[in-house]
Image (cartoon, rainbow, N blue to C red; front, top):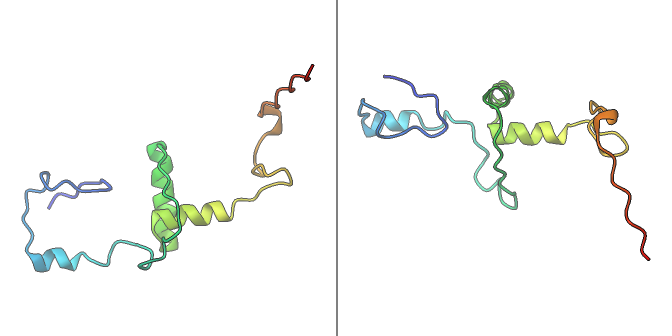
Length: 104
């Protein structure tokens, strides 16, 4: 059986027909949050380079969590300085705010 490396496999691309029992044998292998754990969460949708997505998936798999939960953990543990910038940010490359025009 050919394995397609996609987030959502296409039904048309599969030439092998699996029995209902074989399809059920794959259940539970996908890392997911427990039912109801995503209530009151906001969905995000950003385009990232393939290598960044692969890194997120690899780290998440090593942690034993889904990619969404892995991203959440990374963001929760992101070290910020006193100004709220990541500790690794180069302050010299960040543009300064433009001065506001004085009211006349």
